[in-house]
Image 1 (cartoon, helix red, strand yellow):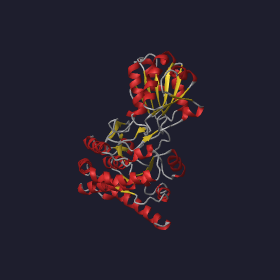
Image 2 (image 1 turned 45 degrees about the vertical axis):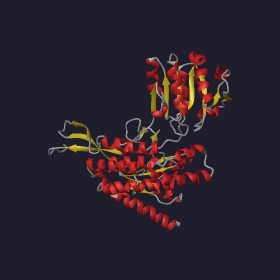
Image 3 (image 1 turned 90 degrees about the horizontal axis):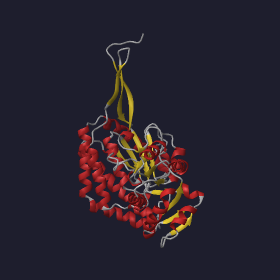
Image 4 (image 1 turned 180 degrees about the vertical axis):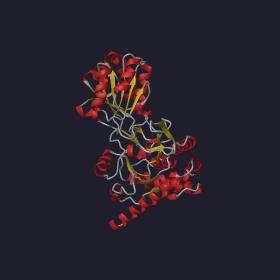
Length: 426
């Protein structure tokens, strides 16, 4: 496509999405759920075909020298596909929030005032690498009565096209417009610039990818943006704590998977348990090849761990999102210093405390300024599917409209509804 055709193409996507959004907004809960169940079945019966398309993307990615973490994000394994199917299934079983009226109150004038939950309209989703995002975005769009325009990364184009075909098939089978979910078919990056500058068609943009992508969209978009830039998540091991639990959680938060934004990148340890805890977790990390960027005090406790990869931490390490088998480790005086460290260095995504002290847990929950704050569990649970949202469109570290994993309610808006019986204002 040349630049003129590309502009026309993007405008056409916008017009089609706007038209489809009106039909989606008035679709019944039963119809939307029927589409989600149809998509569930299509995913489960097309595993081999999806993997064949995905293999073409993986082959091209490896040939291009993409990092292992990026290739890992591209994979459509049977487990990933089943998780997508389960997400659709879970969404279909959830109550429909569209049209729900909340907070209805009688006023002295006689009128009753409340708020109704309605779809946003059209959202644009710009994402990199993970093809499963196509299904997560599409399924949430269907359930929330929206239309969406999806622009995946060029590295996953074949996988995304295959998944989008299944989505549109499910929509048509259920009597919904196929244009309710449209995938941008070109890998030309100029389409992103066009998409984020169409407020007449697009109500919100949701970027999901690397920091560079999100910074560019936040800077250039002419429509509202729901975003997070980094996933610098922390686990703080408090005094007192269950040491076995602390080791299990700190291990899972870091090594369950290195590439997601909810993987722990920083480990903070209370001075009172450092001597007992650090050699235990150090052995786990050493066995798994995790490099430890350490403060002088944590180095002293880890020095005796065989095969431990210890590197002196720099100031930048406390800010870093590694997305790799690397973790920063710092000994702190206690919960107050841990909270201060997290609020200064973290990306306000997800942070966890491992503790037996109820007051420490409450202070952590109240004072840590992050979108998800956890007690005695892994940061890896910061995910729409795990939070019971069916799926997530992304994770927001903004404080307005949506924060944390963005599910159905994050894709809706509230409008005031006023009911009267002939009242007039005096």
